[in-house]
Amino acid sequence: MRPNSLKITSGYLRSRKIDYLQHKDLRPTKSYIREVIFNVCQLDDSFNTLDLFSGSGILTLESISRGARVSHLVESNKKICEKYLSECKKLNIENFVLFNCEVFNFLQREQQIDYQLIFIDPPYKNSCLSNVLNALFQGNFIKNNKYIYFEQDKKNKDQSVYEYINAKYDVIKDLSIGDVSYTIAQKRS
Image 1 (cartoon, rainbow, N blue to C red):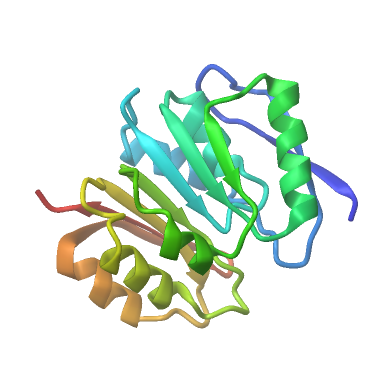
Image 2: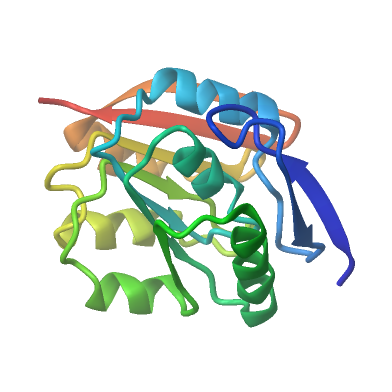
């Protein structure tokens, strides 16, 4: 795996670069989409974020840079986790917890914290998005949640995920760029 780099787009870490490992299932969220996410999802210093299938961790780093209180990341690949930890050390970031485990293992055992913003970006070959949403809804994860963001393959869009979302959320952005579909949903009061 060779390193690539990404630039943080805003906040106190703006323009800082991070390296991430090249991997066939890793597709970091484009800077344009990150701008859209954080223009729509107004973070404040009380926000906790959850980044499922975190990969490069760029969504978490954007959250921290923009003032998130604490961020939890879940990534199953040990080498990707090690790279993320070294990048956080380089940036002097400490308000995160990285879980090196499978997402469903995390969802079964971790339900003690409220996440105001949840990112879900599973590998496209893995059609588990509706199962992840089901686990979030069945667990205690969305009790005080405000926003859910998810990505999926535009060609193989799983329409069942919208049944979960529409039960408690309003879709406020649903757009596609290239072969990726990006959705931001806000929980109804």
